[in-house]
Image 1 (cartoon, rainbow over the protein chains, first blue to last red):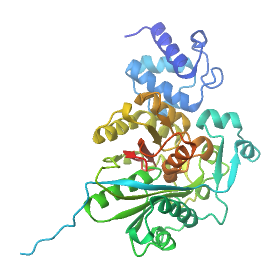
Image 2: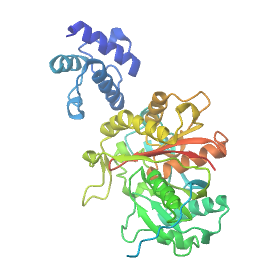
Image 3: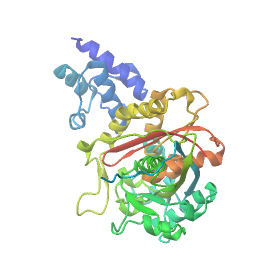
Amino acid sequence: MPSTADIQAGLAEILEEVAGVTPADATPEKSFTEDLDVDSLSMVEIATAVEDKFGVAIPDDELANIKTVGDAMSYIEKNQ
Amino acid sequence: MSTIELQEGTPGARILGLGAYRPRRRVTNDELAQVMDTNDEWIQSRVGIAERRWASEDETLVEMAVAAGGKALAASGLAPDEVDLVILASASLQAPIPGIGPQVAHRLGIPRPGAFDLNAGCAGFCYALGVANDAIRSGSSRNALVVGVERLTDVTDQTDRGTAVIFADGAGAAVIGASDEPGIGPVAWGSDGDQYSAIEIAAGRSTMTMAGQAVYRWATTKLTATLEEAMAKAGVTAADIDVFAPHQANLRIVESMTKKLGFGPDTAIARDIVQSGNTSAASVPLALTALMESGEAKSGDLALVLGYGAGLTFAGQVIRLP
C-alpha cells in the first residue's frame, strides 16, 4: 500500500503530465477547477491515469464528487 | 430440389470519388459568444473548434446530400445509371418517414437503386462504407453511393454551451465501385449499447444531450483497440498509414488517438474540426476532402478512418484514397 505521501506524489506527477500543473502546487486543499485550472475533460484524463497508476476504478458519478486534490487522495486511499 | 444461386462478386471494392458540401454560413466563436455564455478561448481549449458551418433554410439535408453526392459522382467518372445502391447516413432527420436516401438518389438521376437511410450516429459514414463494400464484394451491387449528411443545428439546444458550440452541419459522400485490388479494408465495428443514453434525443424531446465526460472517456480509452483492429484486419501497421481521419468530435480526442497509435512523422492528421465543428456522419468524408484539397493527402494514400458516436457505435477501416 502506498503511503499518503506516495499518493500525493503520484497524483502530482499525473497532474503535471496531463494538465501542466507544477508539482509543488498539487497540495490537498487545492481545487482542481478553481485553483489548478483543470477543465472537465482533463479531469477525465486524470481519472483514467489514476486508474492505471493506482489500480482503482473512478466511475463518472464518483468523479463528479472529487473537487480537490485531497478528495482524490482520500478516494484512492479508500478504494485501493 | 432446386438450389439458390448466388451472384458473382468481386475481389475488392474501392472509393472511386469523394465529394463534400459545406454550408455557406461561417459561424465564429466570437459570434457565439454574443449569444451565449462562452468565449473563443473556452471553446478552443476544450474542443479545438475555431469556426463551424451552419446550414441556412434552403440548405436542407436533401439539398446538401445531393450536392455532395453529385460531386462524388463527378469525381468517380461514373454515370448515374451505373450506381445501383445508395446508403444515406444521418442522425438528424426531422421527419423520420420516409428516409431520404431514395429521394437523394432520384434527384441525382440514379434510376431505382437499392436505397435506404442508416442511423449509426457519428459512426454512420464508416458503417455505410462497410455495408457498401460488402454489397459490392458479394455481387449485390455494382457501384454504390454513400452519403453522410447532417443538420445538427436542427437538433441542438442553442442555449446549451456544452453542445451548441460543437455541433454543425454539412455533407460528404463517396462513390464505391469494384476493383481487383482491394481499396477498402475489412471493417472493425461494434457498439456499446449499455451507454445508449450518453448521446441522445430523449423520447418527446427535440434536442440532443451529451454526457461529455463519459463520451470523452469512452473515446480516449476504448477506441484505440478498434483502430488497431482495423489496421490488423487490413494487414497494415501504423507506420504504413499516410492519412489518419477519425470522426471530428473533439480535437483533443484526435490528438489523444494520434499520440497512442504512433504514426510516422509524415502521416497527415485530419483536424477539420477546427474549421467545421462536429458534423457527425459527415465528418469523415469532409475531413478527407479537406486534406485532399489542401494537398496534405493525395490520391493513392493509405488512410485510416474511424467513426464513433451515439449508440454508442463505432466503425473503422483502412482505405485507399481515390
